[in-house]
Amino acid sequence: MLDLAGIGQRVRESREKVGLTRQELAERLEISTYYVGQIERGERMMSLSVLEALASCLHVSLDYLVWGKERMDNCFYQLAESKGYYETGSDKELLELLDLCSPRERELIKKLIKVVLPYLR
Image (cartoon, rainbow, N blue to C red; front, side, top):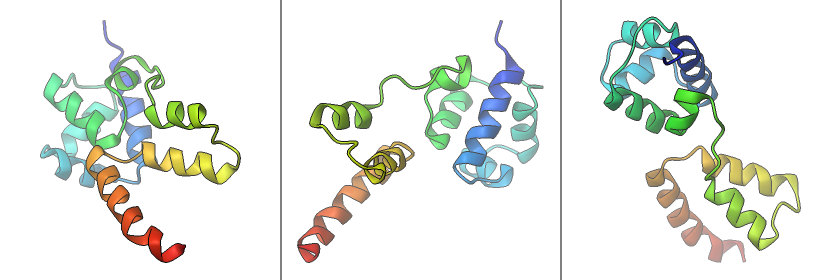
């Protein structure tokens, strides 16, 4: 049996972490604000498509939303560790910020860095 209250709490915490209101989340998912409230209170089971959309919009894994497990597949942290990064707190902060981004947002950031980097040198 799924813990709907736990899922709802993780949805609410993740929504707040990315700085979205219930209304904004509802608009992005094309569902009602009332439905988002029911999910966050653990009053309503959602379809797999809504659960998947929530995870994507909130930049968290399905494992995290459903079971409360932290993401273990974080490619940015694995890459940073393999390259010997984490020398400063700002390196870690940058990786954490990138982890919050969707694939589309990361691609945009990569393009911006490529444009700006020559001017910084």
